[in-house]
Length: 327
Image (cartoon, rainbow, N blue to C red; front, top):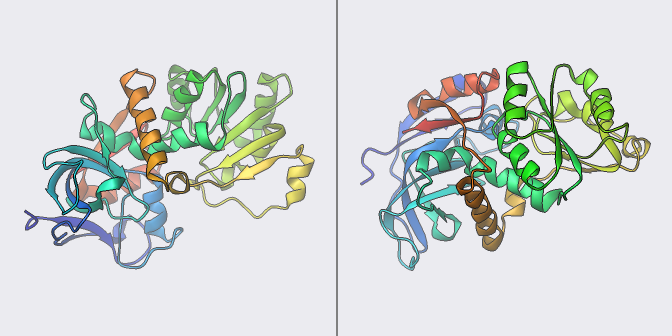
């Protein structure tokens, strides 16, 4: 069953060249566990954070936070999952860049008919992120306005239509004219691109000088000033990623000067600690895929063995939408 199992590991931090392939034996599932044979694996910016050392992990470390596939073995005490069943999952500990993985049964999401494992691998982490950001973290309401950075990226391409469906006026910002068109097509009321220095004035022009209620910012350092400058008084800055590096140190007085602003640095896994929340957000994501609100946009496929090349493309901003790795 596992004689041909292999995975991608990093024995040191650094560039994509540190990624290596190695054989391993995942072992049989223990009590309450299942063994999943991966059919597709999601590529996400958080994978590069572990590779570079921005996020700490014991070395050597695996990579990857989401995958989907079929159950190939079931441990004792597992009653609700069967061999052959299709599942998807996200994991707080890296290690999905592998052909197989043992997982706790209660941290797997059953895939509904009509959603392929490739689609699931492409959208589970990003879709759950969009779900908790919009619904649980920012608690956005109809009639509010939001600025979404990297609006044609993995999370952004899901967050924009999700917010639009809630009745939120979305101002999208992207890194190129082509990506801005994609964000507009996904439902953004306004879709901007260009320099961060020009962004806050443009946002205020579009909101009659008020600014937006919430900024969803996965960029980090490069967009920080523009994001704060785009907020309305008592607005919420949701900084959830570091694509350009971590945000700079700042004084709380900056929040006061901006109009009693709020800042949060949320992570998905704090919002899905409870199995009930995990399944609720998963069901919400699957419902939106089924209804066509979220349209999985897989534009790049790499062999898992070519994970280093996938990382290079991601970091060079050469990807659009979602990317999957195929074992």
